[in-house]
Image (cartoon, rainbow, N blue to C red; front, side, top):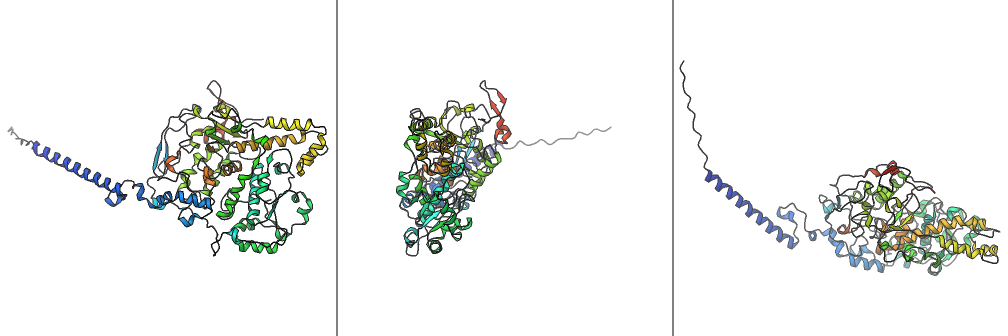
Length: 586
């Protein structure tokens, strides 16, 4: 056998020096390129030139974003114009500016420690705008015109109605609860003011009608209101007026009522010719909302008239003294930083779906475009119906947010749906009307003629039916208790620095209006509902905002908010979870 040796060719070793030099050259070139890129970017940043023009992919310098910056720069001028009644459209603005002026929009991260042991909370809350959303795609709110005539005067100046006729305005009562009644009263008074008529307030006949405004129990102080507006508190008490003195062709349909203020002087003059004595704007079929849920009717001038009415509505000194901000235990204790409205959705019970759907519909009515997913996200809408389970996320302001749950102190306005002592014992205070009720009862009982004093106090049909020929308040005490407790809750929400309100509630809505336009951004929801000069809400400065969902952020919902069944699980005093009814039954 011939065995032939196969010779293997020896591999040549690569030239290590050559590759080393090549590598160093490439590194040096890349470092030089990077330095030049950084230098060019810095120069562009100083000049406000968008980086995209240099081939960069970063976020543009804030000053190079003209659409938002235009609003920021005009914030102060717009606010002054609004106070003077000048339409913001003349300044190029699109809405009411935040008092601090809206800063440039950027993506913000908020990370804080989560210390709540009763449920899982997210430890990373992403806030701010989605950086991938082009600025030019932002939806700019539509502004209402000031509805000036061709002569340049406002509607109130243009409209000079004839002096013939009684010029009364009347409305039918809606069957909602107290804050619905208050909102309806203010809406009707707004119409009367704009249309230059006298408001005839309808009698309070049913339990749901009763506000205490007619009667002499000392609930309200109406002196300022009566001085500022033409209000007739007597004519509406007459059944003859309601049944025989209002022509049928002067009772507006819901559709006619919604467009009345928006129609302007020409439409108003047409109604003046048809109905010189009494104009009935309806109301018995529901609250008079226009454009969006919870929004007053008319242009900026007309809506502003409604806002002004709240300045004149006051509780009596004997009752207002019992709101927390007037109590010694409130002052200098930190309770003034936060007020929370914990609301039951539905008459007489807790209706989870009604609350969530109502919140969502209201929020999306007022916010448009991509901002809906930021401020009307599922967690915000559901958590608002059970704020005790997800309090941190419901707070949308950096200044109001605390690092741990035990740091919160707040004023609570609650209808008893949930016992907040379970998770927040000794961290909140509430208004208490007990002493007021006892004082009123003492006034009646100590009188030499209780029947006579009650006859003097009772003016409305409801009060008279309950107290006729009675010598004590027993028949009326339940109604007095419910109404004054609700009113103290309402006014308790006004004084605190930050309001966590309920989107779908007219109590929270009224609290926002009482707080005023200057404080609307000091809340999770007031700014959403308050925009008289714009069709849609103007979002707050994102620089100071937290817990706003971005497009990139994954949907996260705490287990306790996935259904109302989860709310049955509560923590006992020893820290263990036990399954009992979470709702407070009385």
